[in-house]
Amino acid sequence: MSKSILIIGYYGSDNLGDELLLKETLKLITPHVDRAKIKVLSYHVDQTKRFHDVQGVSRNKPSQIFRAILGADIIIGGGGSMLQNVTSNRSLMYYLSLINFGLLLKKKVILLGNGIGPIKGGFQTRLVKRTLDRIDYLHLRDKDSYDWIDGGQKAHIHLGQDLALENSTENADIKRNNVIINLRMWKSVDALKAVVKPFINYIEKKGYTVTCLSMQDGNDDKAMADLGDVKTFDTLEALEEEVRTSRFAIAMRLHTLILCSNFGVPFIGLSYDPKVSTFCRQMDMPYYESFESLSFQDLVKSFDLLEANETVYVSELQEKMSTIDSKMDPVKSFLCNLLE
Image (cartoon, rainbow, N blue to C red; front, side, top):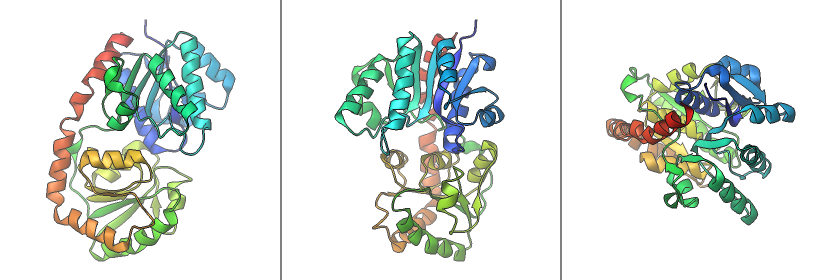
């Protein structure tokens, strides 16, 4: 009999990065589990049904969540940075409560493609580590998280990759002369926009078109409203097509950069969070961390270098992505044994 699954994460919030993670989580488990046996924690259950054809559970209705956990055989955390408290402890404690309630009810709990932290506070750090030591399986997307939890000393922890990373570069279409710009609301974003605005004029004069690409309605679109027309997407397929056919990108969002890597699009990372810096280093792509000190000349110099060495950067991305599939083999094997 097919297992009953509850997937927890930040879904149904108009954040396309999280929807990409849910898409890949479902791709991993649906070969073994009937879709009708899967429920997903969601802000907007109708959107989750429309995007992914699975039943949503409202994250704002405790009674629904209680019943969903009670009825599940397995709870899966489907990627992303669920366990962090950069802005507040509320989100961190929310997910820890769900995980520990599941453990209390003797449910199997696994986290796939997660990044841990940043975690601020000694109590919060101990609570996260204690919880992660108790779950059945932890698949981490980056070495920083793996080292933080001492993953090398624990048999139930596996170092892998972000779930949205997949080797799609061989399917890349003929590139348009287009550059993607992606910014999100964050502290110092105004200083960043003061540099990006003249940079857009610079690359347009070089003959490029520009797409101000929004990954989250109500956030990225507001951040870029004064930079030009902002493009939003009703489907993940439309988002992927936009990235696939572009030549370069300058982006803050991790999953914009991940899509660029999937499709062999060289990029410059604008790091608002350690996860962005870590990924840019992993892909050997240029990035900036201090928005206040970033100058127009810095961005121009980096872009000109990217442009002049485009074929080298594309080749390096393709080489790195060629190893991606094998990194998921242990995860697929574990899920096959667990779910069948």
